[in-house]
Image (cartoon, rainbow, N blue to C red; front, side, top):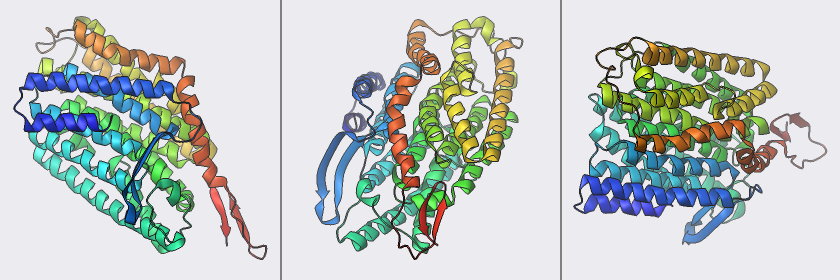
Length: 499
């Protein structure tokens, strides 16, 4: 799953093949990854431990290994990456072979980052997956693609350098405490880190991942990048890459820095809530439907991050569930907007109208994805948001109340947009709007059915992620052995520590 798309993408780049052949080859490779992803999902037992483990010694003198594995935390992120990529190759056919090659390389690198249990290996895949995005925006984006590319590059390079420095710190700390090098997350979870350097390393990791999520106030690169990027690139950024930022916090920050994470959890949760509200209000003011969805995506990423920061099983399970729900709803909405732009040559909300009367299938699919995005009961978006709000109220009643209010904002701008685009009077741009053809309908239909299935019967997904979530949250309630002469401070969500 990791190296097939990377190798296929490199072959496309260096061999003289046509755009059509590249598109067909990319689709075949993505279908193979989809089949493997479904097989992996169905064969996953959900015991809370790592499954499908593969480990090879790589740089033995530094304890760096080629170490892979999947548990309930990484399963749904991987499943999302496998399910959504084939749609791109079916729906959009106007790109060069280089674009399709970069898509495949990005998919392989993302899968590598999701599966890595060695933090150095994760860092390598993390860096690789940024390169195709850089080229896809810089070479194939809109009129203002260069400023958007520069902005996202500066942000991501800064975050990567901070992560590298923090990574070196935890590796050196492991060698100092245990006399051997290791960057495996299981070994790093045994570290006893304290003091100013530990706090600084924690902040460095969080900044790197907050930029990628993006978490307020590090979201300013997102509206420009999402708007200027080709629609399928925006889809990849929103549906998958942002989720890897949340996943990385759960996989690599919490096990190593649980004390620091718990200490600053309230501040982090407030950042998530403020981001939800700010981006939601900003979405209302947008005239460009794609830019509106960009702010909407940032707002929804705020609630997904909030679920991680609340430090209880309900919220974390909701966040992991919402990763798939958000990817399949907002991600599909971006693709639908791409079709609207392709058929009307505009993304301005005021220039659209009456599409529902010309394209009922398209309007129905758009409505289902939109309603899932705002959390309508019976859709996948409701389950994840309900669990997160439940966990947020359990964590802090005020945080939960503000999060619930921010969700209502999302309902307002989404319904307002839908009414104007689909039910206003048609004009010269939309009067000949074509409905989805048979191929497009069959391409989107499985994702629409998945949205409904996850909303009606979420248990198969929850059963697979909840055991891993419980194990992760248990770290916050473990009791350290201390001398009886010391004063013990017991704080919910924080390891007992000496005062």
